[in-house]
Length: 120
Image (cartoon, rainbow, N blue to C red; front, side, top):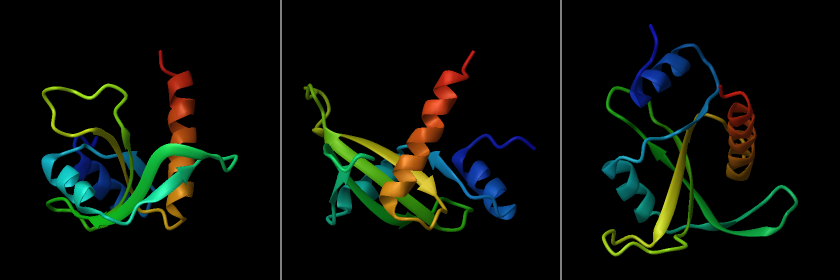
């Protein structure tokens, strides 16, 4: 079976006790959860420099999955949209990793960077 949706992927990995950190689909429900979080931390890059991004985390659950951790980043849009009311960009990582949220982001970004180099 090849997983096709987030729920399938998360269930597939969880059933096999595989650690994961994958990009989460930004559904309306997930965005509402993300926007409701008030405890934000400034994200620092690997060298310790402050970035323009804020980090935060929450526990989340999709239909037919066990709950999992969402690690998110938010930052101001460079050019606000006249048609979208939100002034922020969001990125969410679904994970079962137990390391600090900055480490989840560092590890995720390393993997994504490698994947970008091996695309056909």
